[in-house]
Amino acid sequence: MDTKNPTLPPGLADLNVEFYYRDGNIFILHNGQNIPFEDVPVEILDKVRKQMDHDPIAMASLALLKIDDPVDQLKKFIECRYGDFNMEPDIDTRGRENPEYFECGIRGTCPVEGKLCNSIMAPYGTITKREADIIKLVVQDLADKEIAERLNISYNTVTSHRSRITQKIGAASKVGIARFALEKNII
Image 1 (cartoon, rainbow, N blue to C red):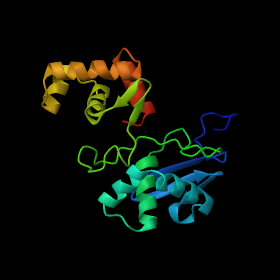
Image 2: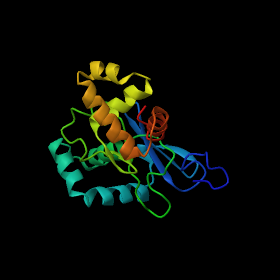
Image 3: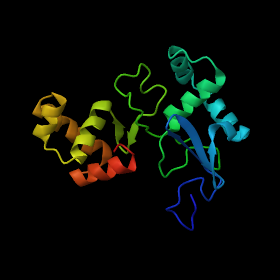
Image 4: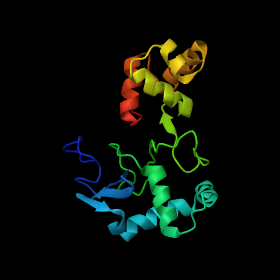
């Protein structure tokens, strides 16, 4: 992150790497450039390939998805692990990986959910798919009863989920849940 202007995204004014997935394509911000996947520097792809190769769960997940081509494996790994655009580098200048939550549109039905992709990490736990669904509805300012009706679950189940959500994220109100949702790109 640029220390002079911390609002700039990683990779725009520094050597960090920010991958993102848009309209079926993978791009990175790096060294002030917006680069399509085909032109990503080999040394960056080699770092990602090394991380992927040393993650047996990711490799098994790619096999389960029947993705055999090494380039397609790399693209899917990047999409699932780094696909969203947040304000933290996916790979920093020291080579440290920072996977992020990416709402791909198939959560809840993906056969490798949570294995290839990253879960939503909170300060005091991991947010489940159902909790993410509830967070999205809380941010829409729905009451717990309305959330229960929308998700076809009981009111008590909603309040239990909300309680766990606030504990996991360290918030005490809808405002705290909304702030977390924005920070994690859940909405």
